[in-house]
Length: 253
Length: 256
Image (tube, rainbow over all chains, first blue to last red):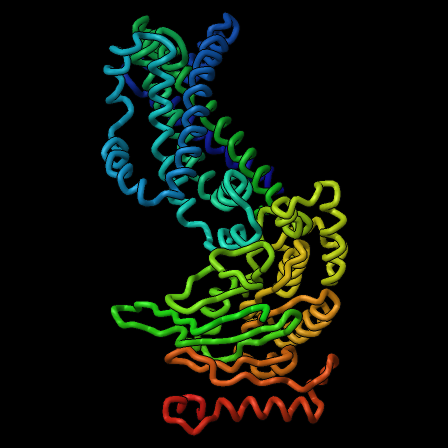
């Protein structure tokens, strides 16, 4: 029943969105090549699916996203686990992190393109930067905040490094780390598009630029919708993985 | 002596004011004894226990177990905490198996050992449960089984039943008394509950606060099977009550 209700919510919500779009299309005085109707965007979507361009671009984007996001999360979590246990060292690392963190990853873009050229690397680097700081900081704070009794018990029962980190500290800090990883997913997905718009000749972000250059607003809007749907899918996938891990660790359902 | 504390002093700085948690404390404990450290909060009983268990160092004096100075926690002396210290992401079985790797027990024997001690604390059949699915009393039983599984020489217990309701507490007191006799462990048990101390201890170490010190050590002349309502039990309990009601001005708070 709950599932049905939420399905109903989704359908109504999307229907309202499409109706507003349709009304705007009907009343606006823009050329329909510049401001297409939902139906035109749908046709463009079908066109992209049937000529294979869409899936090719999704594949390219997903490869970059996976490479940037996964490497970023792994490195940030490992670093965070180390730095979280060394608060004195982190006091020296933290000012630099705080300086770099508020810089939008897109600000690095021209620099990265200068260094690496156009292609996969700039998008991967942007995603890496976007995910890195939230995951690092949430891991450090999670490790610093774990209940000291776990450490006392580990000490008493002779659990030494590296088992201490993998068997005690990581699982104890996991719920908060997972929060950071989850937040970073959304941020990283946002910056994938930015990265591909500037630093690539393929992928979903580039497809938007390409559509603009060809004045194909229908393709442009269809791509935007695809990016949104992909974002939701990635988010649910991560939520599912999180729940599975927490359940296997006896956490709250 | 098996456990030897000599002239142990421990001071803390608290908001700029020095606080003496242990003031020249000396205490000897024999192998196999059940000792209760009894006193009001601030009397240094937990500090003394932490020093014995190796979690804290004393500022001066010496703390020795089996002739060796205590410098760090050891798997031979397990501490049971008031808030259990179970790892919530491990099920009961894996919690009890926690210390077996460090004891170099072959992996094939882990489950058998864990199940044996879970049986001993009355939790057979709970292996697959997670700590949050258990009551406080059951969680403390798991923690006791986990301690026993590594076959320690000494078990330190820091107000282990303090968070439990009265009935559960009495049941656990009975069980820990039985286990201490069956497994022949030396137990040092911190409590502020006089009745609990009289029920459990071979000797009660009565401590006083500000500065934390030992007032006296009382031998409990009761047998292995103790009856909380028996006359001799009440007699010993009253003796301890008297000790806390000393006519010195500094203990005036216990008149209330």
